[in-house]
Image: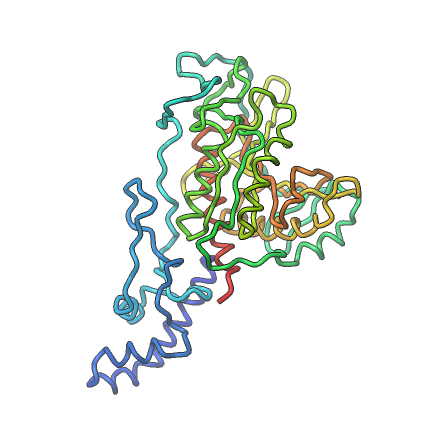
Length: 393
C-alpha cells in the first residue's frame, strides 16, 4: 500500500472516530465491551486478523515465527488509532514502512559443499577493467513508452506501441486464492551466474562470474525473494537445481524438465519466475546499475516478457505481458528507480507454461552480492503484496 493511500485511509478512520465520539460517550456506561461488539459487527468493516495477515515477529533467524493479535487487541488498537484498514484483509498494523526481513550477508554465508566451481576467496581476486557505477533513469525513444502509473516498456517487436499501451492496462489473467498450496515457482535457468563481492573500482578479469556456491549465485537471490513471499503468506517452491554447469548449452531445456513436473503436481502455481542476472559491459569495463532505496543500495532489475512471432509456440504471450506490466508498476511504485523498462521482445524462455511466467534480470555481473540480495527482497516484498491484493475477499 502506498504512503498516499495509507494517509487517505488514516484520515477517513480519524474522521469516523471523531464522528462516533458522541455515541461513544453516551454508551460509556455500558463499557468498552459494547463498543467492541459494535465495531466487529459493522458489516465486516473491521474484522479479525486472518493467518494470512500475520505480523512477523522480531526476526531471530527463524522466518516461521509470527505473532497474531487477538480481537481484543485489535479493538483497542482501533480505538487508539494505531491500525488502519487493509484492502480486504481485515485490520493490519500500521507502520511507516513494512520492514524487509533481515537476512545474513552473502559474504558471511558458507556452504558445506560449494561444488566444483567455488566462489573466489579474498586472496584469489585479481584486477581487470573498471567497474562503472551508474543509475539508469527513464528512457526516451520510439521503442519506449510509459505505463499508466509508473515504469516503462521497451517494445522491440512489430506490435505498435498504441496496441501495447491498451494491453498494458489489463489485469493479470489469473486469480489468487487464499490457500496453503504453493502459488509461486522460482527457478534459475542460469543458476551459476554470480556477482562482485563488494563495491570496488575494478572487476576480476580472471573470473567469469559463475559459481556453483549457492550462497553466491542466483539461488541466493531466489532465497531472498522466497523469504519475503513466505513472510506474506504466499506459498513458494524454489528449484535449486543447477542447469548451466558443467554445460551452458541446453540450459533452458534442462530447466524446463525441472519445472514441468512441479507445475503438473501443483496446479495452484500461478507465477513462474526465472531469476537471472544481466551482463552489462563495455570495452574493459563492467557496469554496476544501482539505486539507493531506504538508505541501502539495490541492483536495478529488468523484467523480460516474451512475444511470439508465430514460430515460438506461445499463443498466450500477451497474458504474461499483462502480468509483467502490473508487476512493473508495483515494483517501481514501491521502489522508485528500481526497475529498468520491461523488455518486450521475441523471446521464448519457457514462458508458455503459465500465464504468469516471466524472466527477471536482477542486476548485472558488476553488481555486488548484497545489492542483488536486497533487490531480491524488494521483488519478493512487492510481489507478495500484489498477490495478496489480488486475493478474493
